[in-house]
Amino acid sequence: MLYVVEGFPMGVYADVLPVFLRRQALSTTAIGLLSSLGVAWALKVLWSPLVDRYGERRRWITGALLAMSACLAALAAGDPLALGPALWVVLAAFCLASATQDIAIDAYTIGIVAHGDEGPANSVRVIAYRVGLIASGGALLFLPRWVGWPGTFAVAAGASIAMAFAVQACPRAPVAPAERRQTLSALRAWLGRPGAVPVLLFVLLYRVGDRAMGPMVKPFWVDRGFSDEEIGLVSNTFGVLATIAGAGLGGLVVARLGIARALLALGALALVSNFGYAGAALAVGTPRLPVYAASLVESLCSGLASVAFLSYLMRITEKEHAAVQYALLTAVYAASGSAAAAASGWGVERLGYAGWFALTAALALPAFFFLPGACAWLGEDPASEPPRASAPRPADASNPREPRPDSPPPLGR
Image 1 (cartoon, helix red, strand yellow):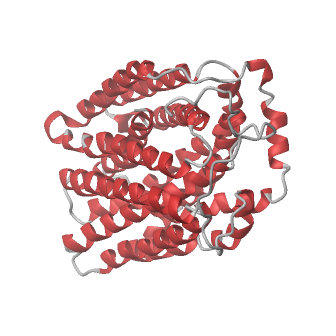
Image 2 (cartoon, rainbow, N blue to C red):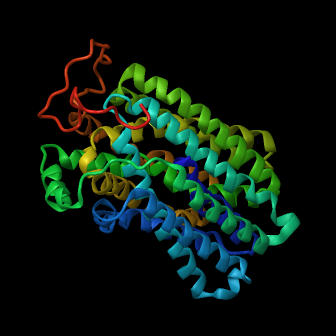
């Protein structure tokens, strides 16, 4: 349920707002700059120690949902474009609240997932997250024809309030006492490990191709004459279902090959899929079938690669300081994505959709240079044979990531 909740605001930000703004005749450059508000996800590491140290995870999630509901209500209260600069303030606050919610949800999850279960667990994460995207990016786009855009944003605000109440049904996750959580000193020690630089560079670049292409996908559909309902059904619903299928398959691939080899194989496949959109943009008159096919293939490959990448981030994060460390990793990932997304509208205006989509496929290639060094923190080699299953071994009391034999099982096990 938590990852349905986490996916909902991202569907509003990434799928609904670009369609709305393009319908209001905003330029692709303006829409690309709007996506730079995603820098909130890059900066969330700055306030992640507050989430780690103070308060219970569910309270942070609930507060963030209520704040996002207030932002959506502001959009519903009048003409968003008439707000002028205030529109940017409202959307920035929405992104800030969503990023804070992500910190709390990810820390909650890392605290209850056992070492070695990252592949299946992240399949569930990605699938549930995409369900949230369907609920917002897909379903909400069917409403403007009937209730208008203000009514659509009002429905989204009400849904956020309902989810805030639903979060209280989650069990309380055990956390260390606040006085024992020396977050900053633990972060310095963690970053002082050998090989930290290749890890951070790999995280920075691995998914940048998808982030660079994403903001221009919906304007591409609008400019090619697709209706809101068609975008909501094919791109935002069927596409998300394809991502869910990829996520389910990705969990099996990670369990079978290991995280390192899955990163290599699935990451390369995801980059190649960007060329599908480039080919669809080159099609004369842009018939519907090539665009449909490009959307489904890209979504499927995105689900595959996302599971491998999230499994990697989860594996190298320490449970005791998950809020700060995971926030740092995802902030690094978001930083490059926000920069590429901000330039995406400029790139389309100069290269065209086909040229920009093709270029995005090359942006993440340097990540594979840093993959062997990044995998050193896993103890795996992407070029080696996958690890074979072995008999369970006793927990090592010196390793805080492994449960002691006399400790209670983690939640949800």
